[in-house]
Image (cartoon, rainbow, N blue to C red):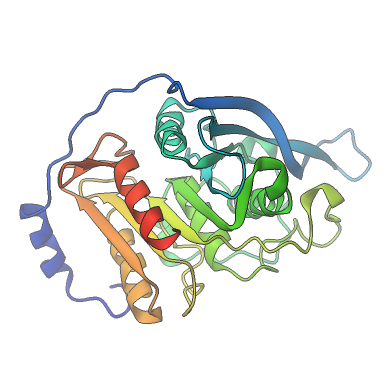
Length: 307
């Protein structure tokens, strides 16, 4: 049972009062949105048996979606992280791009990142192996890949803040947004201390391209059908506000994990908004809550907590 939560039975009654999932069409980029692809945001170690150390540095990329009809200065920004069980997925996922397009159309500069996956065989420093009981029910292939995703999310945050002038954004108004595995990473990057997940461990020097020393803390967190199962103790007073979006029919990451995040926010006094969707399954991209889609709810949340 999540800490500080009421009985699960009370939450089950939400099934009868929350809106049903609804569909919405995908669309190309809006006229006022411009996309720039494959910008390097940092470097990460991956397995390479031909290298002397057994590892080499690999470039990490993001795509930039930005509005073209507002001045390119002091704009709010959103770092967006795809899902895929830490095994697959891409910054070019059409659902992710559709949400980013809607955010950019509303004035947000969006950074859609790729990060190291299980097939990249990133290093496992042996310093982080929580293996919590709850995680055993999730299909997580490799704690090394989980940790690398957390490191890369923080690397991306540091790059964006360090280059805020280049991108015409406000360094104090950078949110982090993740779905599924990306939501795990968004919560870890947004809630843990700056020195946590800052590198790949002893023997893997942080390259200067990764902007060591820059604060990776976002101003707000949006997590969609994810979990804080690997960072349960990271919730503290003063942490960024969190938006929780989860389908009640999710069998991949059950909605009990959303209730756990809610309970931990309540316990720490962290502002949050939670949207549990009746009929919503994992990857609830087309779900609506009270007639509002995911993009609209995200914009409302960011405007309230990251004005």
